[in-house]
Amino acid sequence: MADKVLTANRLCDGVSVWLDAAGNWNECLQAAFVARHKEAVEALEATGRQAFADNKVVDVNVVDVEEVEGVLQPLRMRERIRAQGPTITYAAGYAGLTVTDRPAA
Image (cartoon, rainbow, N blue to C red; front, side):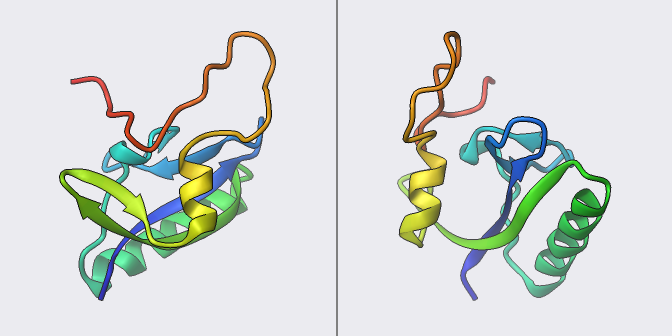
């Protein structure tokens, strides 16, 4: 089984987010909680269903990732594009994030 993360789009602004280990939706893929066994994947799915029901996120999906030299990379092209940030220009002040961004220590 491939490693998996939970991704969605935040309802308030449409930005791609990933669920982190603390249960928060994070804009940085590198902060995502990685599920490595069936029970963890089932927990991610349940969390995603609840977040959708609570109108926090939309387009909730568990996606396959691989870790390459310490960096998480989605296996599907669609998810790689989403992880690299918007492909359009957002309003002034939004810098976007990339797949290589890492959470602050």
